[in-house]
Length: 275
Ligand SMILES: [Zn+2]
Ligand SMILES: [Zn+2]
Image 1 (cartoon, helix red, strand yellow):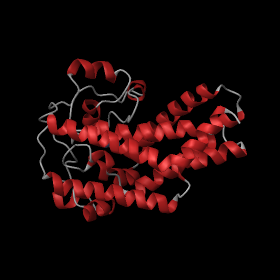
Image 2 (cartoon, rainbow, N blue to C red):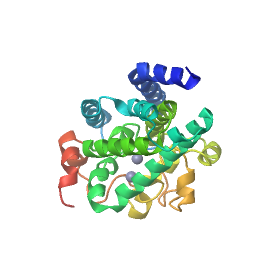
Image 3 (cartoon, protein in one colour):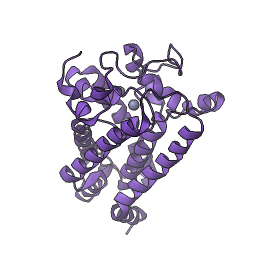
Image 4 (cartoon, rainbow, N blue to C red):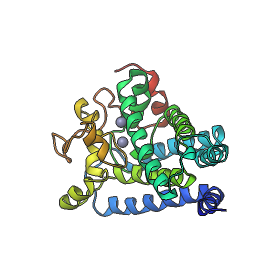
């Protein structure tokens, strides 16, 4: 049994705990950071908005577990045992396969995010994420349930085509979930540190631009993990025009808190016309 088999077995046995544990750890750290040094004053009362955003996260988690009981890592194992996918048919070193797989998965998530913005029908789903009137760590957890299911289907197809190691899928999911909380946090790194980190990774200051109500800014900074893709595909905007504390967050056409920050309104948002 090779070392990658032991790693896969360990990951499959503890998949849910690894995901929940790492998510909770990042969440608590960012929560404290937001408390100590918030970047912007929030518009809405936190408790009510949070219970709705986190309510959507819980609903999505339940739906995913119901529809996809095997989870992505389980599919990656099946693909490797049955020899599906590109990497399962190459004799590359294990570490190289992990690095290439994580990079390609991140690129795929960047591209699907661009598509969610460009295709009008998909934008209706994705605008639930953008309609939040505030921007904090719970914004990173709110996506329409149909978008989450779509994303999982895309991931399954990717895994079957790419054949990534189980470890790569686990790393990718843990990093993506952690970065979603970090990137949406109502905090900022010291400006010079932000510059350095941003050369490689997406920072909260970078992703906040993506939540601007100005359409040109909404359609920029699509990356979730690596900042490379936005630079490469020329979708990078350095700073919001109005500045981080003055910029308007959300979508210009949806400004009623009952609609955009309450669970029934969020779930209905893809199906209503512009107001
Ligand atoms: Zn977006
Ligand atoms: Zn976002």
